[in-house]
Length: 154
Image (cartoon, rainbow, N blue to C red):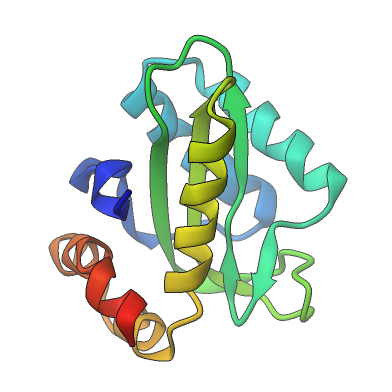
């Protein structure tokens, strides 16, 4: 599975203006709703509920919020690059400026875990993170995410 398999160009928020964790999750839920045809409030509540279990901020300014919904036909990703980092209760207590959210079908156990693992690997690559932070161009960000095989090899 490549990231390009779970995210569309329209699911890239290149210069998010969110100024809090809740607002960011709401903005991501709006995009995820457009991608999945689901209610944005349902997706927001799903992501918020997961955050209550423990922050999905993995450190180095990166978060991977995720959750599962019944009756989805595929895993859907949303990527947000924030204009200004927001507090996210991350593992390293640093604010977050790069977020890759995943909404998965309820029965997607292994595929959901593979997607999370792949995103985590890519978001640990210093060159990829630097490139994502240096642009607010949706097409460039999408291209960088689509080039995950190269990023994964580095």
